[in-house]
Length: 144
Image 1 (cartoon, rainbow, N blue to C red):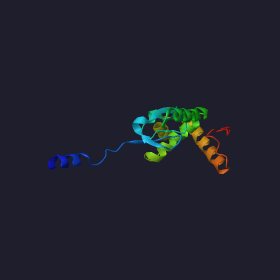
Image 2: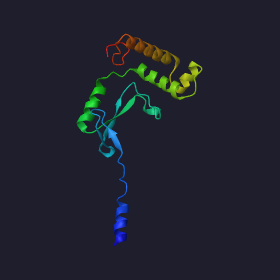
Image 3: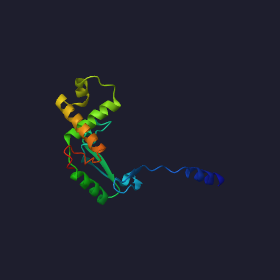
Image 4: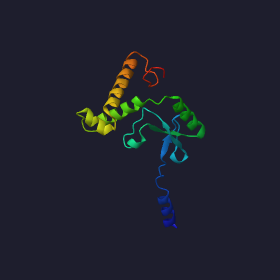
């Protein structure tokens, strides 16, 4: 009888951890299995490990209503090609080996030289607007 008790106590050991997610709307932590997830178009998003998902952001919510709310916010945000290109360039410059030429940058980002120049101009304009106190919503024309 003592062995049965001892064995049962051993089986009650440490609890199995439950993977958690955070709601993008309210910040509530909840079990990963209950998550409502999907992808939305977002030109600021360059995926570090999955470049084929560039321009798509994964959103996670605790319920369908919060998911729809976050999704609707992204639907209102304009998709700016130059912003996506700037994010791709930033990823290459941050995570890879140093880049020496525009041709090399083009190969590593998949962009051609005119697009690289447009992305740099968009980025510089955004920095200027941020310094002036008007970051806008990520659009190059400030109408955001």
